[in-house]
Length: 186
Image 1 (cartoon, rainbow, N blue to C red):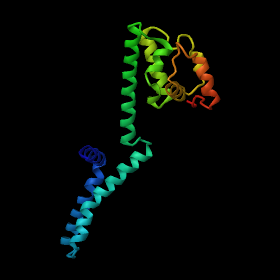
Image 2: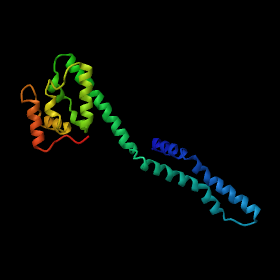
Image 3: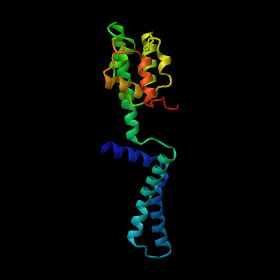
Image 4: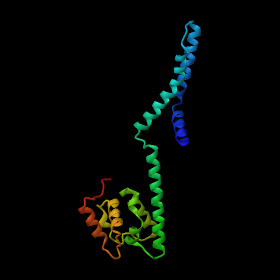
């Protein structure tokens, strides 16, 4: 709650001109009240004083929605998924370095489907390859080029698939394609 309030106040401050408009209008009304000897109800003065907050709030809301900015929850979720991807890269590297498990069989143990994004999974696997110096697909990468890797790794997870014992990357890719799991357009 405190964090949300802080973010709201920061968004309002970006529109400080609108924030100041309310008190300025109130000041002008007070001056005109004295100059023209008219009686302005105090409720009108109070309304004018706080109107700037509403105007600045509306401008902040409009700016957020006009730029297509992701809601804070989406940004936090993306940050958490990226951190999870980084952790999975480290896990893969530990498996590959120990020569205990590498290639597709190591990928199958990571739960990559939890990343919820074909692009993020591919990015993580590219990082694995760059940092390990070896192909995580063991030369079978072309088999999955048109396959949604979220669905691919969901199937691997559901079947408790072991590439050393149960089949090939191409075989799983074929099952995913048959189930309509084609790679999303990027």
